Image (cartoon, rainbow, N blue to C red):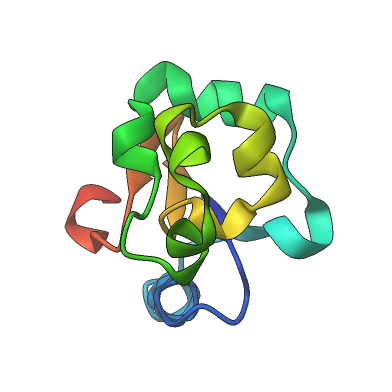
Length: 105
């Protein structure tokens, strides 16, 4: 399993803990350390609409201008990876957005 997020996020930490408790090997892709690019973001967008991927309750979302919110692009998300909901979990090629262990089995 591959987990995308930020290591200090509570939901990401819970996901890592869940994997450990259930004997599931996982790798964390930390946006702040490993980055995010168009290729990765487009792979997310193949399975999920941008509205499913972006956390509109985040502090980062509130700092965006109205124009940026209206014309949300990959460049804006790449520059502000904390806009993405966390975690995004790649389980056998299927992406799950959010902490939903029942979907990872």
